Length: 537
Image (cartoon, rainbow, N blue to C red; front, side, top):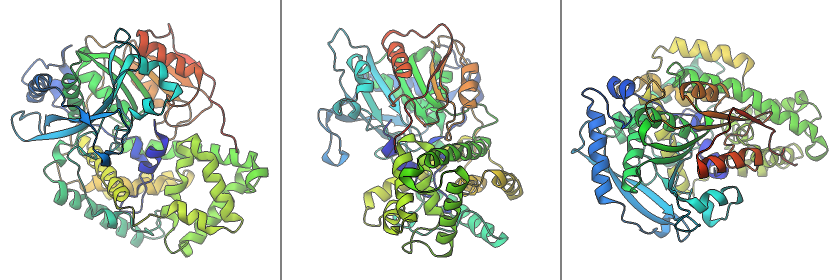
């Protein structure tokens, strides 16, 4: 996984002053009960399921059309020899001959011989709202972790529906979206809460106004159907798939709807697929996990006090954080970095180990008197119109999929009670995450019922990879999917918590991912790996 691009996406602001903490976790939705509960090995429902028929029609059409591959346009910013193209899918699978949308795809051929080739490996990095188009660049950048797999597979990325170059949606003007400073996510009064509720309601209305035609169809089951059409367009009989974060939920839904179409599937950093978790409870669970990982980072900073001078205990580092937060609340740093912007910046540390040292370094500079480094890192850049449009689009897709996928509480008292209680012991992310998701309370299109994720006829062993202390997708999610997908194997990275394990250097994990993708073999039992190397200051 490209942690830098995911971190940028993870730190996009919600209009209510919340950052996209949940950005990488998200996604779910319903298919009609027949396809959800009764899909057979071919992904067809026993009964009259219009979506199941629609995806069969669309896949057959895509198989005939193929993909018209050509050099990527310069503004796609993808190095040669990566090629780009489009796959056409129905907006509404219940109406396969109705309105169509085009999905952007790209690929790079396998680096091995013709006889070594095993097909295409399709990737989703998470979100909902993340673009997978950078995936083939793992080959052009000669990533050692992926070298063996690249010999056997074409690496294929895509922008899911609504994302980037695939009929992008929007909920608010991007330049307005990034304006700073936002209100402090932690409310100091009922008036603060009322203001945030108003912002969330206006955001939901903006989604309908700007993207109303797409909204009812922005669901995880529809994206899973899109994945099957892309598979067909590539000429692949079965799907080889790598999904990270929300991409694991997309994989779980695909595996439930199309169990007989799966050849190999690796899911990394797993969203809990239980219907009870998608999506309201999943976000509350995240708040608890983020607090734990935030403390892990503070312990590391304290252990490296000789470098950072932020305190030699977790309590002292936390005290510096609270002092910084209070200063920014009183007068935003540089006029633009308040508490909301600070949380958005600092949350990359609990997300990714790769952010531990850079975040600590900028924090250290601030405490030593250099405010500008922190302002530069945490403030939006109004001149980066393309980046701002991408951030707004990512947030719009995140919101649209999570809100449409599942029913959310509509009673403010439920939100207020749950988040007030959680905030007491888990203050780092709780209110920021609440405002980020609150548009779902007044969502203007019908909310679906999540799919019952389970094993269907023909589903092969699925490889599940998870770190024990992941903040964005807590460990219980991997255990839940493992129980639901019979024959799956769980590889746990103990005493670690970076989000996205398969892209890190840890031979215990890397070798098992390679072996599975190259041979289909999994260990006889679940495996626990020692953690990857701790970041160096």
